[in-house]
Structure formats: structure tokens, C-alpha cells
Length: 330
Ligand SMILES: *[C@@H]1O[C@H](CO)[C@@H](O)[C@H](O)[C@H]1NC(C)=O
Image (cartoon, rainbow, N blue to C red; front, side):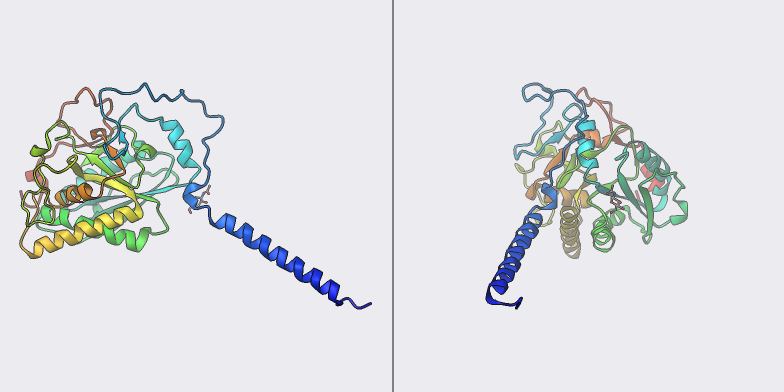
């Protein structure tokens, strides 16, 4: 019997073709589903209050005119949010800068972060300092890490502040790509007092400054000289955002840091320093590129400010400090 007669060959060829088509089809259907769109269901045993679109907080605005959520206590369910992000196995990086005497704030910052900052998630904190031996030993929970990166000392705090964007940019390029999903850049002279978790995650995340959120934008301390690349004209601007806390997905924060850094350096070449250094450049950037999530001043309060009625919880707050004592120049 000849196994390779015309009929058999046709059948084999057709089968191979069919298998090939099937394989391509299946491969494609796996391929076309981007990671982000994988169906993620909260734990089906999860019990939580029925959501409503007609009842909720009425004393604050919870969405911007470009439809970014504004996160206030009472607008989200932390348990539900955590269960959604848990199944995505996300990793969050955070940066803090502790140059000179600012290392004195590290202990409280790191200890309170253990209690409140993305508890139960994978967190990697990067401490930038010129005094690595002053970084305190803090016991970290499983899944949490701390890395110390050395930076040169500086004689002017403005310069320290200015270099932050550059350091964030290089950290993302050198270390974080493929190792973290989100990054937050936080001021070290602050403490956590309440939950800061998955409700804060977004593409580009900015915090509204506690000092100006009730003011007219004409009073915001934007950079007002048109020759600066941080310029925001009168009659422009949305909110005044903090330089002391911002974040988002890696590529968004990378672009922000890179842009602010190059604008800062181009200004410096022309002898201009924006009114509030990187904060001014950040505000200009956020005006042009709107944040996709806005965090209320709960996310960066100031200890010396009395609490306003719309502030139901203070999550993170700047400690009262004596500038003359800690800054290399006043
Ligand atoms: C989560 O991601 C980390 C790092 O990629 C990995 O080591 C770990 O096994 C993952 N955990 C789960 C439950 O997938």
C-alpha cells in the first residue's frame, strides 16, 4: 500500500493547514487582549454597601471639569478597591529625598509609611541621601523594600529641590522599568496619619495644595514671568498642586520628570529660577497635561493648619519645622 498517494497527501496538507489556521487564531485571540483589559473581578464573597449615583458627598467637588476623579474620604470603598488591585499583583515605587539634616525626618516617614502607605501591597521605597549612614533601620513587612541611593550634598536647598526631577527620571530609566507599575514622589518632612492606598492610583496623579484650595487662582503662587518655562498666565490654571506629592504610572511620571527637568535647566541657562522651583514647573506641566486623578488636600496637609470641615481625614501631612535649623541656606 502506498501511504503517500494523492488522496492521503491532500488530507495531510489540509489538516496541517487547518491546524495552522487554528493556531494563528488562538494565538491572536490571546495576543489582542492587552494586559490592562484582563477581566478582574473583586472577590465574589466580598460584601459591601450598594453604590449610589444619587447620594454621596455634597460638600466637595468629586470630579474635575475634564472628568478626573477628585479623591475625598467617603467617595470610594477601600476594601473593594484593594480587592481589584490585589489580583493585578501591582508594585508601587516611592521616592523620598533626605539631603543634609532632612535625614532627621526619615524615621517617622518610614515608620508611618509601614502603617498606612499601600499596606498589603508590594512597595519599594527609594531614599536619596548624602548621608546614607543616617538612614534608620526600620522593620519592613513582607513584600516591602527600601533602597538607599547616594546623592551629592548641596549648599542650596533650591538646588536640592531642582535635582529631584533628574533623579526621578534616571531612577525610572535605570531601575524601575519592568520592576514597578506605579511611582509616587513624596516629601520626606511629612508623616502618614491615615490610609494612602489604591484609591490614589492613576495615570498621572496630582495633589491639590492645602494652602490654596479655597482660593481664587489669581492668588496661586504660579511662576508669573513669561520668560520662564514654568509660566502660567493670570486667568489660567486649574488648581495649585503640591510639589511634595505626585505620582502615576511609570511612563507618565517619567515624561513629567524629564520635561520639568529640561525646562528647569533651560531656564537656569538664562538665569531664571521659577518662584517655587520644581513645584512651579510641575504646576505648569499639570496645566498643559491634565492629571487623570486629583487627590484632595487630605493627601498632603500641613500640621500647622487647623483642619477644615471638608477634611474628614488627614492621610499625609507636612511636619512643623524650623527652616533655619534644617536648610543649608535660609
Ligand atoms: C507578583 O509579582 C512578583 C514580581 O514579579 C512575583 O515574584 C510574584 O510571584 C507575583 N505574585 C503572584 C501571586 O503572582
